Length: 217
Ligand SMILES: Nc1ncnc2c1ncn2[C@@H]1O[C@H](COP(=O)(O)OP(=O)(O)OP(=O)(O)O)[C@@H](O)[C@H]1O
Ligand SMILES: [Mg+2]
Image 1 (tube, helix red, strand yellow):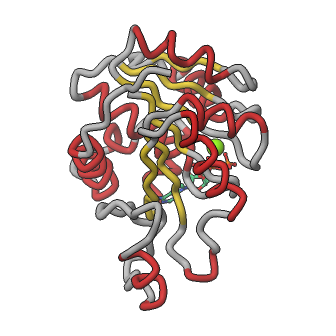
Image 2 (cartoon, rainbow, N blue to C red):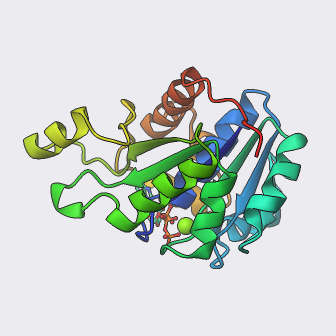
């Protein structure tokens, strides 16, 4: 399966979730490749920080921030169980290319009703990609939820019959994500019982239950 973390908004957690989901799948014995499709190269930076720290390699990180991503990713998917794409900010050719490669698109969002979740432009791109890839599945993931996040009622209403639907498992606002990333670690490597690590594990289980198969392109 190829899963792409996409949102044209910056700082919503694309890279954080891409790394931690990839790490959790590899911890479960899957062969994982992470594609850094962001010209900023944050996932590559993480991977370099990791080798500087002398930590074991959990999954390969490949820099592929170019519009031919959709033609190159399927080859990588042949030698991996899961390919995770850390997407670029902004809607552009790169995002279109990532959408054409993906079987599952996860859209991290901060659960604020003021946050305007995903732009109409991005949702239109998902629908456009479905013309070529009718099996393409999309889900919102609520990230950086406050400790007391009662999802505001208008957001909750928007959630319940939202299209794309929202994953049940949310991820809290937890400093552990930032501190782990700085030293090339995953949140589960700080402490596997930390709430952040448990949320990532539960998120992976929920995604696995979607039973997304790689569809030919
Ligand atoms: N659940 C979380 N709890 C606390 N901090 C978080 C969480 N998710 C992300 N962050 C922090 O927020 C910042 C932005 O996250 P991240 O880099 O993953 O977002 P992004 O969507 O990849 O951003 P960009 O669009 O710039 O690539 C980082 O400092 C990260 O550590
Ligand atoms: Mg990023």
